[in-house]
Image 1 (cartoon, rainbow, N blue to C red):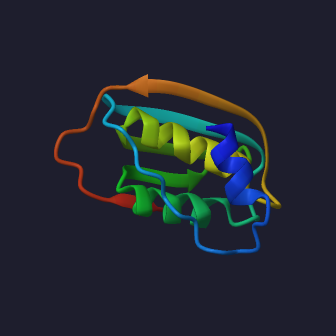
Image 2: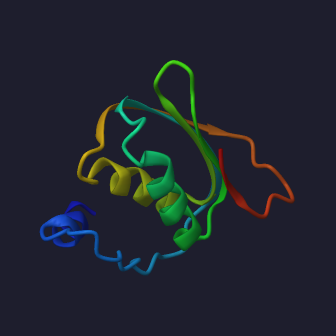
Length: 114
């Protein structure tokens, strides 16, 4: 997967990302906390954009402690792709990621931005 990101971001200048084809993987829900320079840098908007393009459900929001919380539900490979995508964006500096798989939410159909 690292080679995919090197190709995508080697000449990144705000161009649209081409979403790769994913092989089918297990459906999960993940609770993720991003630490670092993740507020005030467009993190949530970028996360929302890629989540929508990957057809994830869940949400992304800023927390009062300066971190960003994201819950995503979809295939495991798509969620992992979102995390790696966010790590490679210019201006955003992720220092740590807390990742936990949690129970699925039945009937969820959207990805929210708050």
